[in-house]
Length: 113
Length: 114
Image 1 (cartoon, chains in turn red, blue):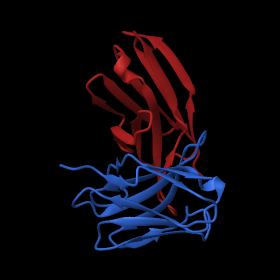
Image 2 (cartoon, chains in turn cyan, brown):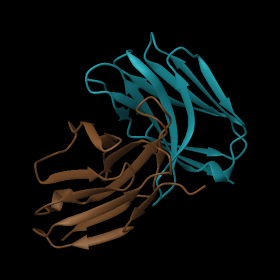
Image 3 (cartoon, one colour):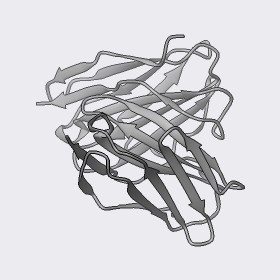
């Protein structure tokens, strides 16, 4: 059974800092891994999707990497801004049997001006 | 274009009553998903539709939960005889052509069972 873990659960940084959010998964047989952002009281916004054959994806100040063999993904946010404050969720789409997105519990990021 | 919409945005109901939650996916998206997000818990997969059929119902927590999709578009999630532990945010998502595609989420329905 796939388990996805995100560490830390919460992170507070000053504006302008570069930061890394971590995601680990127990079953490396995945189709892809997705990173989402969730603002309070809102749904999820997809940030990046990395296919299992890819090593990384970039969008603006965001860069996500994937290392299937070690069961890890990281989301790098460059030059953080207060508007980046949100909860960041990673989710692994697992192969075989019941194919579904399995989510971590998220990292709550606060960027202080 | 329009994103995924859900209604109602908030629902307060008494224990034992039935509730229906509605999801309108992005036009043209053939796959639709329901998730539940409880306080302090991660997102929990409930059910997945491809067209009008549900190849994976494995996440439905009990037989009080059911879902249907008609016309390959709108879906309703029904919870019968609601219990307090059903209180959560219910999120719907859709994707273009199936489980391998990026999922786009609606704003959710916050259900409170008193």
